[in-house]
Image (cartoon, rainbow, N blue to C red; front, side, top):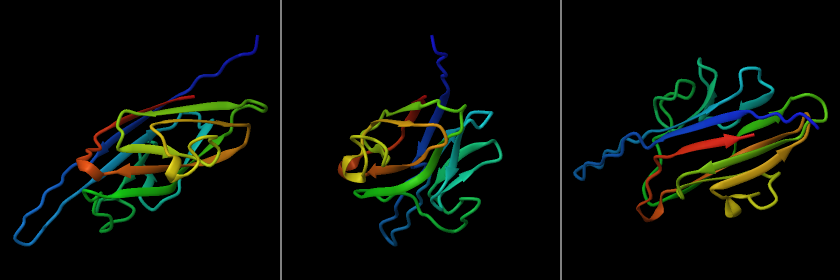
Length: 166
């Protein structure tokens, strides 16, 4: 019987930390934070790709669309209400496990406002086909990018946690 390898990635989303407006001069403060935890041995690598994605000192991958982003200060005002955002290749995932080991990734979003896609998925391969339940496989030394769609239309709120099982 072949040995099965299981690794758990925890993807936590802390989205829209503050949305406020003042109707006299329309001042809005919005923040958006996502953190993705990689495994300690980096057998499955997470590599930031978008300007809003970075690896923190704690080894987690963060997606921060706010002016307080440590590597992109002063840019990013959060996600506006009643909008739809698609971020292609927010980060890359690479399988550097042992030779000839294929890894299956299953990522579930608890919010219809947050959907994912990757070119290697058979069904969720573009922003138009993004899903709350993303499944894709990577062979040894293969990599793919993961994109996100944030749907803020119809009064959707984003506060969500994502869990990934590999």
